[in-house]
Image (cartoon, rainbow, N blue to C red; front, top):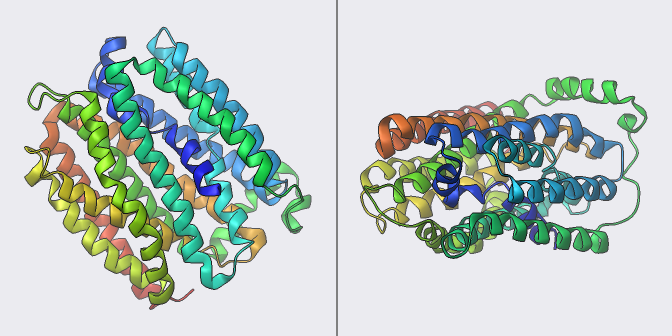
Length: 385
């Protein structure tokens, strides 16, 4: 149930992927300008994570999540009725600021499972997030092609109302475990993040890896949305959605790979998975002329990208329970700063150098990611937790 809730909440940021060209045409703006929508959304999420997520170590996760979801409903409705580009951009940015629920849930769940099931339980949540991304990319493209892009956001608002009811039913209505943070004033609660970073420096490597991985994911899918609907390729937005559906097999593989990481050790598994990830990324520039050949690198990167997120989380979710939400705060800030910068960079590079430029940008970032997984493994050893 938590995975399904994560799916619906996460999907909100990804409806734009297959319809990005359609929305740009509607508002009469360039590819680079429409790239500001996902970019500002991700950067706002990073700010929201910093300002709001630490509250999870102080207040009931259930109460916080329900408040944040309510603001998301309002933001989605504003996007659906926006008559000007700046209104759509502003509503999307506010939506990003309150998209906190999927990042409170891993810490919430980690306090309720045994340590030897951490990889598997996080894999289930990650599979939920992947399912949300899959449905967003597939559904938005088809709905926009046959109905209207605004309908996408009206439906999304309905999903969020359903999530509110689901979370009311399944989340425990009790206070979280008390810690020193529970009595800190809000400014000191935020400041307390920095000593925790010094105590757990590995979070900086995990966060950097995830920032690069998430940035690559956004840059590639923004590029795919623009490339396939360009005059050169000539496909509709529904084709981008159909392409996303073909990656559904990744949902079945992710829990299995989470168990592999439990047995192998987080850092060792992360390094090995990154090798396959870079290989997949290297194929995008070679297969970009064919819709069917692109399935190969999409499958590889969509399989091993999420599992690196799982192994990243495993390196810090074994910290004391009272510190986990603030460690998750640092991790998610890195993730969405990377995603925000890459969202804009990917569309800007596409505007300048087309699909080849976007694929080369992604490959360069993947090589840096690979280097960081090697450093993290050699620094901490084989799966040291």
